[in-house]
Image (tube, rainbow, N blue to C red; front, side):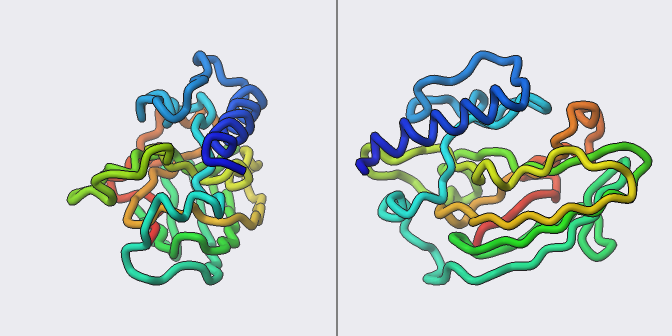
Length: 200
């Protein structure tokens, strides 16, 4: 499949996910030219963009540390104010790119909360993760659609398994997938506030 075909397939999958999530913002139809603000979506808007884990795009993103793959087991807790791993707030989850992530979310709050990872520009970071990409390569990286956990009830846990994206050297924002959490800063992390998912 060509890179253009992957973009169309990825866009179709992402737009289907956004429609499933009840996205009220207009869909981005030309993902390759999308502004990061459009691709990342707002809180509760669903994620738009292509999954950046397709094997065909590995040529677009040279690996920074020469390592990728493996399996990471992550036990993430959410309460009504923040995410934590091992009791540490403002958590940055760190895994390799192109790795298998086994993520368990446990809700210790008093209302439903979920989990999703926002999209980022591959040119983000200080210094930027990438300064350029070959023609036809995406400029926005997103975690795959199967990395989203719909809101779970208090006391519940849910485990999912997914592949992390190919581009590394990026920090992706993590947030609750429950629209009711949009006004809770600790459940709407940005890559700069100390809560995120770092791909090494």
